[in-house]
Amino acid sequence: MNNNNNAVIQTTKPNFLHMIEDSSGLKIKKKEKSTPQQKLAARRAIEQHFEKKRLKSDIEDYWFDS
Image 1: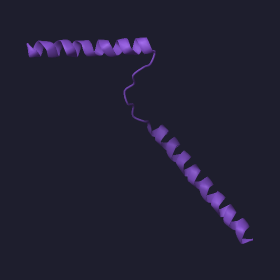
Image 2: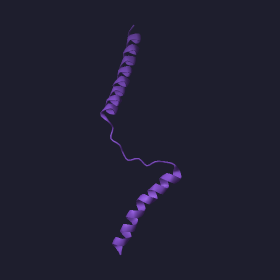
Image 3: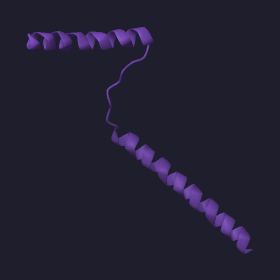
Image 4: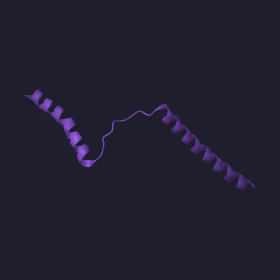
């Protein structure tokens, strides 16, 4: 009897999630892996952020030293 209940739950579960998606208008997404291009773009953005931060600090140091 327990196996029969588990089978019903397993078949109902996807249908229930589908009903929630339809009623809320939201899509449940699976976690997607980022592509190498996305990783490179993220890394460049991080490098630019730190470079801008370093340059700002260097300019402030220069103005206070003068």
